[in-house]
Length: 293
Image (cartoon, one colour):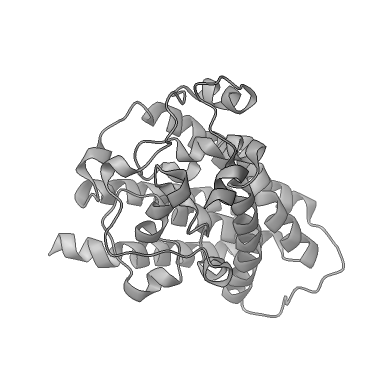
């Protein structure tokens, strides 16, 4: 009974509760700091607990020598996210705006999310095509398992490059800092679900949202099989540009990671890896592999 409830209610309950907590902060009824950070932390902690109750793969529950490194990745990248949000609030940019400020906050948040997500999709695809971007992005694909911390396992330069175009565009359109911060907080909770070792289902909504059962295909060990489902939150762009993929047989425990051996485990070594070119660990050109598909 509890297991079935988790399978079908985990995502809507946790994400719904996160939205309910985010909107009063965006409306100015509660302080953005530490409000947004608390929502993100509680959402991610909920996913971590739910994984233990209904795991997708038992093997992924165990530390693969990656937990300490992923904790550092999470602290660093959520720190960058918080700094971005705080910076937006501090600047309070007074630019000419085409933003629909009169719309309800939740609709503004969805609009900001669509703009930011399109930027993420574009940069994500480029990161699989351009060799130097792939070298930065490979850190995200290097994990031998998927679990709640994988969403933040990113080289900080890759995280900045992925997020900058969409966020800058949203700011340029006049989106209020509180709305952008609200979306980034929700995205943090969603990314924990997207990479979670949690056996949950959204039914037909998986065609709309980039949830775990869809996103796991993107982490296939064979690079050629991973060129699908680039969307971070929405799957609109994957449908529009022909990169959506769904099959009934799911990704298994041994199916994820990098084909190339020797990716470092320590955080500092992962920061250095993109700037080194040892023959044993450099993948063949991402652009070449895409062209060969």
